[in-house]
Amino acid sequence: MFEKFLSFIEIKTKITSVFAFLLALAYLSYIEQTIDWQVTSVFFASMFIFDLATTAINNYIDTKNNHQVLQFRRSRALVILLLLLAVSSALGIYLVMLTDIVVLFIGGICFLSGILYTFGPIPISRLPLGEIVSGLFYGFFIPFLMLYINMPEGTFLTYDFNAISMALYLRLNILPIITVILLSVAPVCATANIMLANNICDLEKDLAVKRYTLPYYIGDKAIPLFAWIYYVTYIATILMVLLNILSPLILLSLLTIFIVQKHISQFSKVQDKETTFLVSIKNYIIIMGTNTLLIFLSGLLHI
Image 1: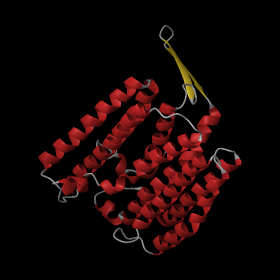
Image 2: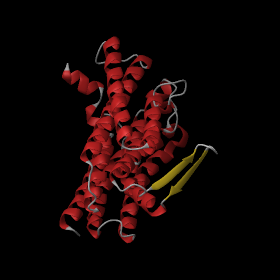
Image 3: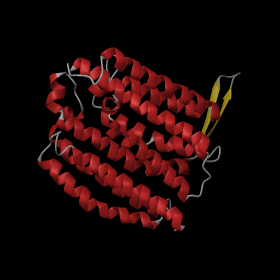
Image 4: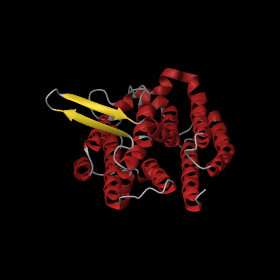
């Protein structure tokens, strides 16, 4: 039963949310920012369980549309995914009570996007937006929220609502936002490439069920795009050192390009779901694991 559940929620794919969380945690440690463990724990639980729920919804709907076998009876699978949604929603509401309306707004957008990814009249998964959506919501919003709930109030933005004039005043602090954007480039790009590799490998199957993903529209350009998305992560790393956002120690992560490039070459030759698709997972772990470890070590060694 438990093995079926792990398969149903595709536990192996949860590295995208966990590593993005750990990257932000490492950065907080690097800048010696005190971490509110209560708020952080609630955030992680809500985020992780919602990730499980969106995968469950995706499998529930896809197996119905593609006439594939589900891990459980459909009635039981529906109960499981609704339970996951309920728990993650309750934790999300509790998180908002502990924080503020910004978390409610961003969390609401993430919740809505997760539901609409495979549900609704025009699911996001059937559009050429999967790479952008997955990269943005896993790679950017998780680190942003993690930093937002732990850093001093007003670090990223301040707001004020005038009920009389019905006006919202919003002030953004550019430098902290640039910092979190650059920090998020690696998880955004590495996550997007997992989706891109998946869509490239599944192109024919997707067309059979009228799913028109990004590779359908860009054709042969999909492979060069796959490579350049990885290269952007290394450019962002160099920029963060030049802007004194991260320690020069992070430049050691540039050495991973040799392994990443080897995987890119393998995928360029053969695009197969059972074999070469795994290079996108390996590259994600290599890039995110190395960056997270080096940022943590920079803080530990006070470099």
